[in-house]
Picture 1 (cartoon, helix red, strand yellow):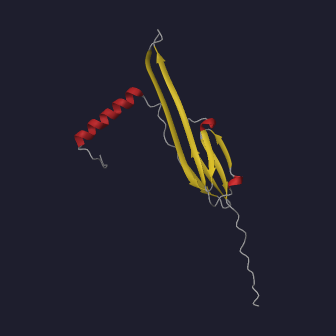
Picture 2 (tube, helix red, strand yellow):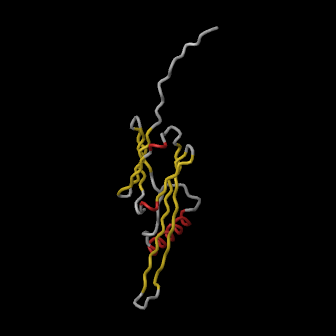
Picture 3 (cartoon, helix red, strand yellow):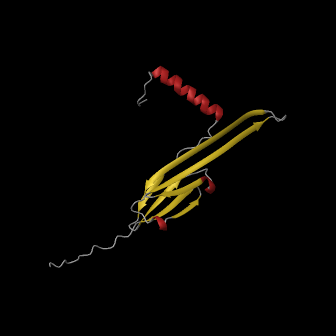
Length: 141
């Protein structure tokens, strides 16, 4: 095994065994991972795709604050298991909030378009148009 660990091998194996026990016992369906983004430059615009599986459209918010775009997602989930008498065998709750901030100083913020389908949030971020440089001749008086 290769890796950086502050534990000696025996301690690390014990820690790893505990982690595996906890993971196997409680299961992993209540965990939320952070979302990953891909940004493509298409000349006149950027295309940002954020992977957000498990989120509903209503869980996601987009806010523009001056030159920054804040992408935020909140998710809550509850899992209940009861026996035949209605007593809890297991009851777990999970909440998570994830956010990413992007500098959009070179983006036409009024023209941003957002869509969400199949767990992928897609943003079309048009670049600001810079008028061509103009040359002006000054008259000396």
